[in-house]
Amino acid sequence: MQIGEIMRGITLNRILASRSASHPVGALVTAMAGWTEFAIMPAKSVEIVHLPSNCRLTDALGVLGYTGLAAYFGIIKVGEVKKGDFVVVSGAAGATGSVACQIAKLKGATVLGLAGSEDKVQVSLLLFLP
Image 1: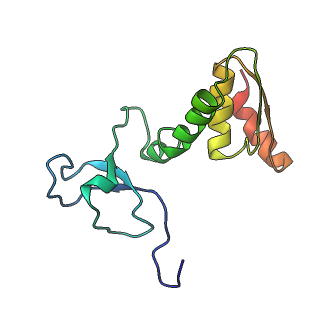
Image 2: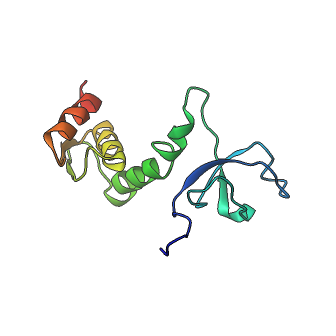
Image 3: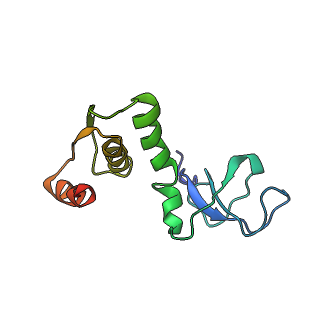
């Protein structure tokens, strides 16, 4: 990155103006728009977000967004985790790691989660208690 450039990142956005029939004004989208108040993006660069009614907007950036997708594909598609497997998750207290642990447990695996500090371990334990 150069000084003065917009910080890169995936963002959650509301469409304020559109020339695309598939991306109406008011739609919630994610995009690699960077950290800015406004961005002009081609329709092919944004993804419409459909959240269940009981979700928070930030869920689209977490468990229902790229974080959740990374955990899902890592555990289900790449790792092909199944009942009886033993899974070690590095960074288990982080966003993707905590979701990966939960998915592995749901698949019936025994999970060992690694975290960088005792505080992170204590917080993570709350996620995994029955």
